[in-house]
Image 1 (cartoon, rainbow, N blue to C red):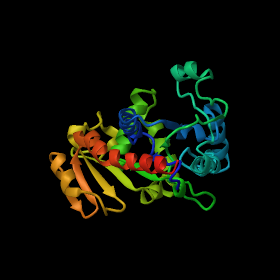
Image 2: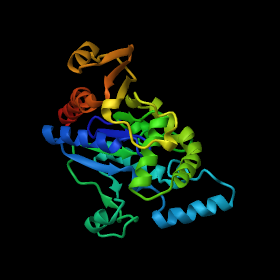
Image 3: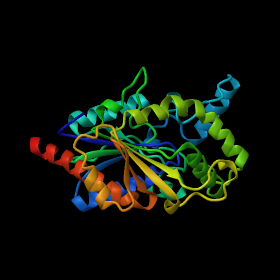
Image 4: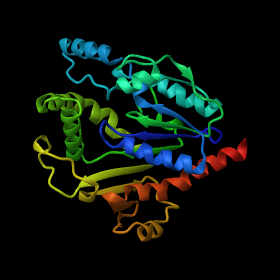
Length: 291
């Protein structure tokens, strides 16, 4: 962890809603005029899109049926750890971009499904912001979590997560239900061993749960809306958290445990603004106090 060069990491599995959370952070950064170095977790995948297909096929031939982007074999976790460590020490480090689609590819000047070259992070930033799968990962070989100053977990309950993935992949990517189900099963080993443990490392978790029936996500026709959801917000260390203030400011919220507050799903953005803004400003204040 670094006072001079703080790091914020957002961790969640695919389709968990980290992109929406990133948008809230961007609002805070823009409003408070904070200079940010953005790093996407996809850029630390080991393989481009075509290489990943080949690697997956080769793994299956060898009897490995759980090779996925969730696990360490498919990612450059050592390089991610190095980036976090170097940024904390110097405010710099190497990163790259991944082009998800043709629009991003046109902007980045690479083919869809491939990476840009490695570059130095922009100079003179106030904070590094990571959003991806492994912002708080700890394995026998790496410990990314120890370098992040503020770690946020974003994860829906499992049936809701599957509903979101099935809906997205079928409607946006043209996959069949059977193909998406196979992907879910293939990822499950790595999800249990490398994704779930990160949420014990995070400082704050935002977990969305549906208030409508999602007992069979494989036949669900729609994703529950924010009005059909609640969000459980868990603080790893509740000391200093003004829970009475949060409950008063967020209509319909209540405390479920000494370190947890439950809010209506449509109040997530407000809750994040109230909870995260002072923490981000404190990181920046500490940074400027030593520069």
